[in-house]
Image 1 (cartoon, rainbow, N blue to C red):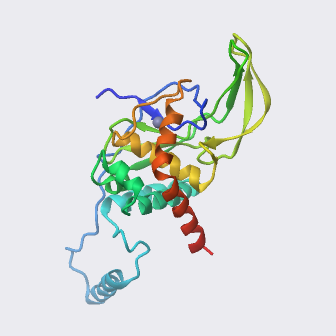
Image 2: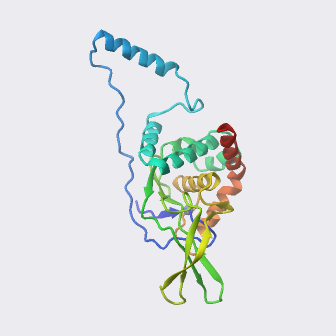
Length: 264
Ligand SMILES: [Zn+2]
């Protein structure tokens, strides 16, 4: 299947200068569960029985969403990514909370897939450590100042269940500000010209609202709810983000504020 990366750009003029490249999906990974067929000594069987009872009756962190094997696998993958993986995991939980409710945001995604929460739960995440971090600024032929911001995340259009979202480790998912590099007219000479706040629509970078928006945007590509976009100046990525927020802004706001109340 020929498909292009779709991107979450940071602002209206946002785009990356990086070339597209292929990524591997991890749809074929296998997670093996515990095997209980081996005979155990009596004492170990008693311990095993206690463990089973604890697992049966221990309080669940996510009572509305019983853990499934794919979710366990994704959680383990994210925990292996360190602090940035923890940030993705928190935003992922907030997106799942939105999609598990009957609301306007979920209904919008359901126009393309009847169970967007289940698709999102199956997705894998990767960090793109070499993702661009800089904002590039230049004046066009009409003298207008233009900027292109680093991308937030990317995925394949119509990639479906168990596909992968690549998150830019240096983009607005994790960073609030970036150095602006000025591009000389007609040339490729760059010089630093200040610092800019990265934004995802009206949200500053490295905020829960921006992170939720980035993930919802990528889900929109993965289930074909949003049209393809790329790292060009045409503004399609930002229009796609606006489309996401037109349907999901209230739910994103509620998810963030519910989480902040719960963490006090
Ligand atoms: Zn996009």
